[in-house]
Every structure is written in C-alpha cells, then in structure tokens.
Image 1 (tube, helix red, strand yellow):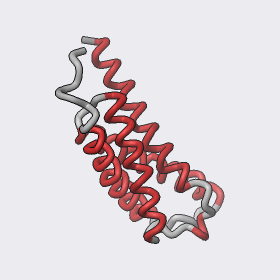
Image 2 (image 1 turned 90 degrees about the vertical axis):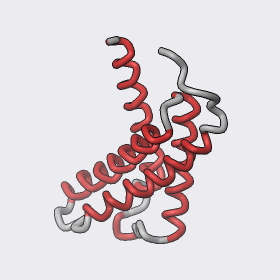
Image 3 (image 1 turned 120 degrees about the horizontal axis):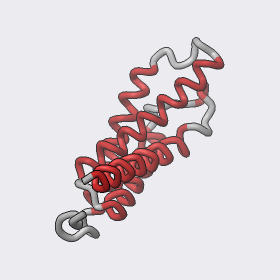
Image 4 (image 1 turned 180 degrees about the vertical axis):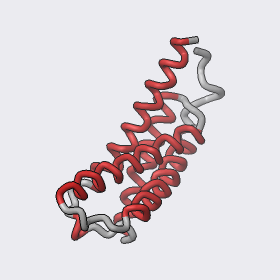
Length: 131
C-alpha cells in the first residue's frame, strides 16, 4: 500500500513538472513588458504545449484523463506563480494583476492538458494497469 501511494505521488509530481515545463518554456523567455497572455498566438501555443504535455503524461503514466488534465493545470499555475514571485521580488509594481494571470494559466493548462489526455486515451487501451 505504501509503495502504491509513493508511486502515485511520484507520478503526480512528474505530471506537474511536465505541465510547468510546457508552460514555462513558452512563458519565461518573453520579457514581462512584452507579454500579452490574451494574444491569440500565445494562447494557441500554450494550448498546444499543454496538449503535448497531457498526451505524454496520459500515455506514459496511464492516469485518468481528469487527473492528468488537473495536474497539467497545476503545473501551469506553478509556472505562472514562479514567474510572478521572481519578478515581483525584483520590482514590486510588476504583476499587479497576477490573479488573472493565474486564472488564465490554469484555464489554458486545463483545456490543453485535457485535450492531450483525451487524445492519449486513443493509445491507452482499457483501464490503468494493476499496481
């Protein structure tokens, strides 16, 4: 039983890290004053990155679609919050609308991760393997 719980925690952490990497690779390199999270191009790239992360997590870890999508969204939120914390330490006037950034990131992560996890269901036959 303890091994099962430990494995599920590791899989959850891996899925969150996958989501954070998908979000961060597109989000962190762009300077804050040039960032527009509501631009169509940015949202589309973030949705595609979330879908790829959700697909990979679903196929590799065989977790349920809802769990995979939720954990990818948590990764997106973590990536946004990491940027908010780091940049706010440098300039406290940055990110005065950070709650909206978090909601946008979480929503896009949930949609993209869910789409990728659903697509991954094509490759995952039946129920998750017995552990």
